[in-house]
Amino acid sequence: MKHAAIFSLHSSVVTIKGDIAYDANNNVVKYDEDAVAAEANMMALRQERTRLLAETDWWASSDLTMTQAQTNYRQALRDITDNATSLDDVTWPVKP
Image 1 (cartoon, rainbow, N blue to C red):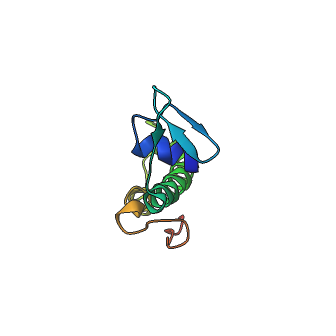
Image 2: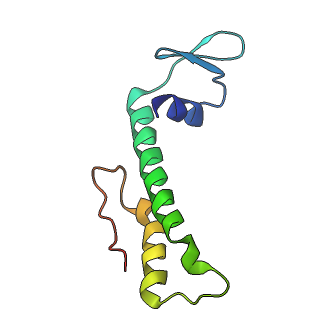
């Protein structure tokens, strides 16, 4: 996830070898370790949120009507990144 975070934060990075990032001219691209760690945490959080949403996608089928509890659950999942910054500090909504 760290490499994906580096790529996400630095559009000039084209390759990473170990912990060293390089641009297209093979110049080293310096990056902030704390910012990369924060972005990696958010990426992991969004990945889990997306997985949980995918589990309930069938609720939104055209031949079904979601209950208010189902709608609220899905909205709470979409809003999870408004307050949480990592998997360590998230409070997941309860699936109805």
